[in-house]
Image (tube, rainbow, N blue to C red; front, top):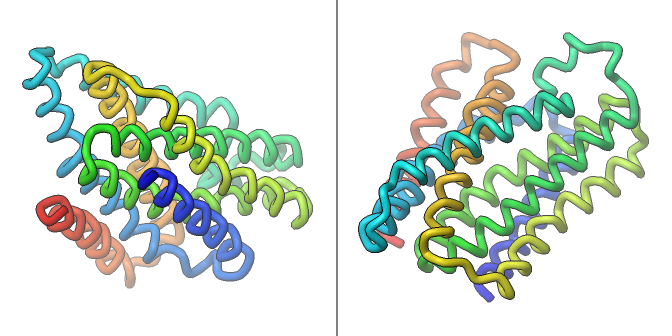
Length: 244
């Protein structure tokens, strides 16, 4: 039930991010920079060490988990480009500002939020510490998911009411994903491969979505502070991984 508890926290994180987007869109860069460091730290200090530990225990070549990582990274890159949700470059595609594009983009975000919930649930199947740290990473970046959902809906000329409806769907998705793992139990080998895949997903979100958005305004006066917050996020997760 710990997975459900943490997935409920993602609901509030996602919804809070969406509401934040309605008011303080131009002040989010510091939070995004810290979040990118959190994701990098979780992948480097908890998920990948756990992958190698499982590989040793099961006598499996860890290269397959690394293949899963690359597949996860490239798969989400492909999905993003196909549905045009890389909103950092929205101004390059003025003809794509259409309500249906916003809805399709929001549905994609809800789909990967569902995977976030699965990641939390399977993390707790590995160990409590893995589950908690994966949950922290998901809660951190789901705030950005909520913000992105509302932003993409609004920039593509959807109403506030429809934007809030899609935000609610995105917020519920990780709870449903975590709940699904209560009836799905996977083998240690499959778990190792999924963790590799999930690590690729988190790396992509951090490097390709969150960091570019954090630095999108290109204000040289605050660039060092933004970079410092990314380092801080990774450092916080390093110490958290040692203590949990």
